[in-house]
Amino acid sequence: MSRNTRLPPGPLGLPFIGNVHQFDSSAPHIYFWKLSKKYGKIFSLKLGSTPIVVVSSAKLAKEVMKTQDLAFCSRPSTLGLSKLSYNGHDIAFAPYNEYWREMRKISILHLFSYKKVKLFSPIREDEILRMIKKISQQAATSQITNLSSIVISLTSTIICRVAFGIRDDDEAHERKRFNELFTETQAVLASFFVSDIFPSLSWIDKLIGLTDRLERIFKDLDGFYEELIEQHLDSNRPKSMEGDILDLFLQLKKEKSIPIDLTLEDIKALSMDVLLAGSDTSAAAIVWAMTALMMNPSAMKKVQTEIRQSVGEKGIVNEDDIQDMPYFKAVIKETFRLYPPGPLLLPRESMEKSTLEGYEVQPGTTIYVNFWAIARDSEIWENSDEFIPERFLNSDIDFKGQDFEFIPFGAGRRGCPAITLGVATVELALSNLLYAFDWKLPCGMRKEDIDITSRPGFHLNPNRPKSMEGDIIDLLLQLKKEKSTPIDITLDNIKAIIMNMLVGGTDSGAAVIIWAMTALIANPNAMKKVQAEIRESVGKKSIVNEDDIQNLPYFKAVIKETFRLLEYVSWWNGF
Ligand code: HEM
Image (cartoon, rainbow, N blue to C red; front, side, top):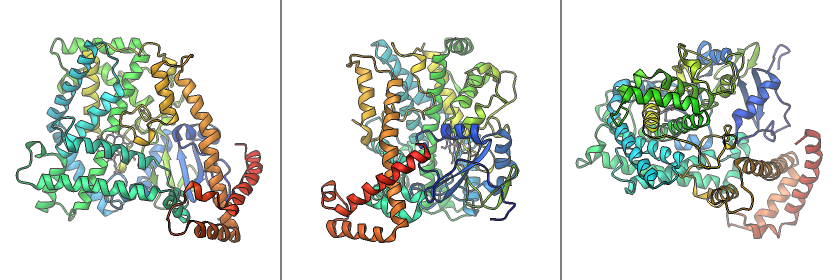
């Protein structure tokens, strides 16, 4: 490193693992936000071998996404995303190259254009009407409405219809399969792949079965796309498939009217983007807007009055009505500011050596723009922690990517190409929910019980992965719901227990594994000896079971020695 090189400041890491042991993967935006208060608006850290730079100011966001956009417009690759995107053949996670440029142009022109978004408006209106009917039925029988569940189902149904032309009814075979695949895909992508930060340890992912799980979901998704493609190519296909997104791509492929030769794999990769980016983001925005309004009754009253006065007795809010509702639009903006669906946007990767605020950034660095921190910067936003839609009245600030203090959809070359589609769904669903019903938090739930730091609807998501059913958090939520404990369990109680589990369970568990691996790599003799013992004992079985471990004395000694060393390290490092 030259004497003039100045890397951004940041927390001290450890050899080989960098800052992995300090990293809070459950809420990285909050972790980075706290670090920015200590190290400044630009800081760096390392996760294994990956250098990371985090920027937390509007000025630096503009630098990354506009002034030096070309230097920072690639995406880092992870094992899961690379596999599911057919090796970067989608748009969202593709590296910056000619293929991505063409695909993005095509999608903006043919897929997410204003005209196309308008064309899908009957689908949105139909689905929202169905949702309102369902809630009315629940209200008529005094049932509590699980808003997250209803909204997630709404947005995923809209995406299913818009992208693949499938709905029929909730029991339809494809729709059910879509739900299962969607949740399993989310679960796999949320998993921690050791090889993403320690490429040389990819065998650990294999050993613990993660690689197999990824292969399985890839095969299932591939089969799902194949089936849909076949149905779309069938001359007797249902009417609902005509003009949907898949149909559009197949047509572009057939007509050869675009500069690239689209393959079926490219089309499948694009389907993944629509599937992943399309429904969760809009659902999160709707649920957070409702939550914020329930926590702020005066804003709720004001926005409902505006909507009801404007729409009158019509019975439903149509997309055209929304243009005359300035306070409602301000509520949506304030929701995107305080509760952005993507608080860290999507990570970028630097393509060349560059300089940010006098600090050097090497090529191959992962760059995070922490919009969560920018949106809570009290130098930009007065009373930054409070939900005050009025701040956007009589203001020109918009989320289209020109105002870098307000970038919930990102900005520049890699900014969200589907803002119009996303906002149309959020506006129509939210306005109708507010128009049709009066809302309040469930009896006994207080404003303070709501965890505003979490990512929306993960454990409360009805479509949560099967693996989460019956886990400890699930059990606590059930006890809370049933009120079957002598004390009232609050969400705060649950958070405290989760924290204990993380501090006492997962984190230290992960630290031991990482330290054991670090120590073994640094001591090749011990590594050879322990691997020989394990392989000899387990034979050709391909997986180590818990029973096998009882016959591995050297392996047990390695763990004990790691604990001995870890005790010293944890005291020294303060975790
Ligand atoms: C409220 C809804 C939505 C929000 C808040 C949102 C937010 C975002 C954000 C923050 C990014 C990263 C931008 C950057 O790196 O600068 C992004 C990218 C993207 N979004 Fe959205 N999004 C939404 C809806 C949608 C929908 C409905 C679709 C498609 C069906 C979509 C497709 C994409 C794609 C393909 C990219 C990647 C663009 C690229 O890398 O070139 N998004 N979105």
